[in-house]
Each structure stands twice: as C-alpha cells, then as structure tokens.
Image (cartoon, rainbow, N blue to C red; front, side, top):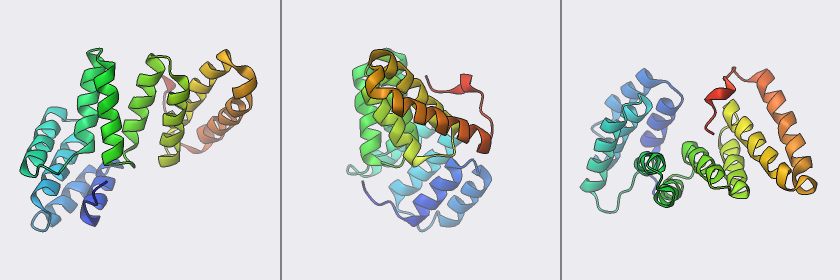
Length: 190
C-alpha cells in the first residue's frame, strides 16, 4: 500500500463518512498541494461517494494514467462490481483482491468479496471477509448481519464447528441493533 498522505486520508474519510460538503471543501483547500494522481483520485472519490460512478471511473483512470506506478482501490472495486454483475466471478474476485491490496482499510471491497464468495459457496472465505469488514467498521449494522448470515450457512453444514461462533455473532448483532442507527436488513449486501 502506497501512503498517499494525510490530506488524502482526511479527505477520503470525510467523504466515506457521508460528509460530502466538508470533504469537497477540504479537497478544494488542498488542491494546490496534492500530487496530480492523488488529486485526481480525491476528485474521483468525491464522485464515488456522491454515487456518480462513471465520473469516478474516469478520474481514477486519469490518475492511473498520469503515473504508471499509481493504483486506485475504488477503481478496481467498481470494475469488480461490473464483472460480478456480468457473471465473470473470476475477474471480479481479482479486482476485489486488488482493491484490498491497494487500500486494506477500504471496507467495501471486503463486503463485496464476501458477497461474491457466498454466491460461489465459499462460506469460509466469506466469513473471513465479513470478519475483516467488521474489524474495519463496527458502525455499520450490515457488517454484523452479513457475518451472522454466513455463519448460519456454515452451521447448516457443520453445526459442531460453527454454532458457538454463530451464537456469539448473533448476540453481537442484537447488541449492535440497540446501539446503531437502524438499517433495513433487506439493504444488506447479499
């Protein structure tokens, strides 16, 4: 993982936390000081978190084309989602893995990879992804719910091995429901 600097981290954190206006202002204040590929990625991130995905992809490609050694996690994530929707699970898997390698704290990659692994029946791999996602973000109820779901699937295969972990995860989910803002479970990733 390349350290893209404190301004990148701060701007991206604001955007990912839904503070779009604040993130845009921070980006505007840092424009002159950011290296070109980092600036382009931050602009792409602004589009990404505004859910303007074609614009985000365009900025990410511009960033990567400006420096052959530069790579963008959210680009690979978005391309992975496209491949998954087209049924190309192998390429989607590669893209999600690339996103994780580039930016190991970008939780969305773990969630999507977990969902992909559930689709292909690799519940153990999905459990690892959802556990990692939960370690990165305990403020999203879906991370708790996804982990419970995959543990339930694993219990149906091997109750003796997974039942304790399943019941502990179920308890964690109930505690999280009490303290986190509500999320309709139908909005989960799987």
